[in-house]
Image (tube, rainbow, N blue to C red; front, side, top):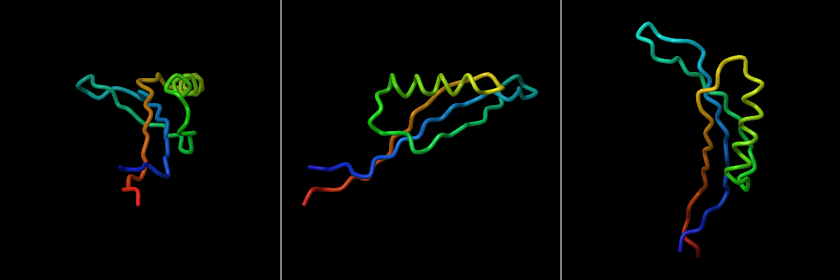
Length: 74
């Protein structure tokens, strides 16, 4: 059976910094590394929303990215 090790989580806040000539949004990502991978999605969203209030631009989305190494158990 496969085993997950070394989990890492990032929280990304995408902000809208302007509009292109065609009207589409210009997005920039604010990435917060070192987030506890054991956080629930509700907790991660609450943190993202709190950090979103500190942004001077409108927030487009809040994302969570989880990464882990996968290997077979010996």
